[in-house]
Amino acid sequence: SAVISQKPSRDICQRGTSLTIQCQVDSQVTMMFWYRQQPGQSLTLIATANQGSEATYESGFVIDKFPISRPNLTFSTLTVSNMSPEDSSIYLCSGDRGYNEQFFGPGTRLTVL
Amino acid sequence: QKEVEQDPGPLSVPEGAIVSLNCTYSNSAFQYFMWYRQYSRKGPELLMYTYSSGNKEDGRFTAQVDKSSKYISLFIRDSQPSDSATYLCAMSVATNAGKSTFGDGTTLTVKP
Image (cartoon, rainbow over all chains, first blue to last red; front, side, top):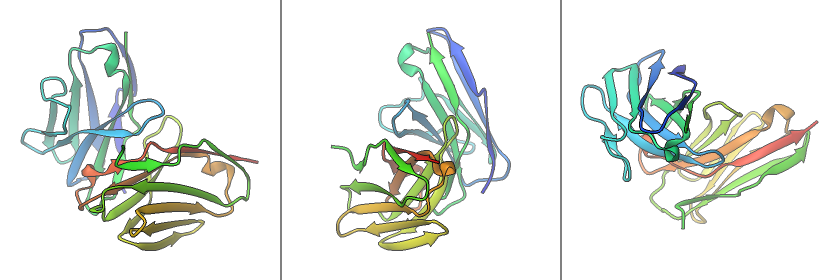
């Protein structure tokens, strides 16, 4: 497996602002993903971060709201734009070397006031 | 109706008990079945991975998949307080793991 770190681990933000979350993997991975997890609920896939190209978004998520970058095989960022209290959640980054063996970062706990 | 339904819990058992965690699903195209363990304030970690039907054993953990019934289970033998966590089942159609569909999780507490 690999180790994934995320920054920040938590943040409290004001409505209307934006937050960029960083995800760093300690070794190369084939795919990187961004998830959202509401407290006590399951993981919802936001998008697949593609290296050097636009991310692939799932239904209900759009680039203007959640711009994603992946400049290389070990790093990605997710920005939560123009935040509202409904964006309060845990945001998780994951990596996959193939064969469905995903490993996750510790998550970023976001609270929007 | 959700594609993946997981027994909601919470589940509380004494140390040493056998634990059974279960999920059902509706999409017959699912081929890959995973169990993740998530400790409080941590990201999920892959516990077990199974392709198609059958059983897989890893130490105290056994994963079972019954595709005919669209039912998967995770058994924990000789449960320990360190097993206290939320367990998430996940399934996918292809090897693109990011397309996994997750259950809502079952929170397990093992009491000493």
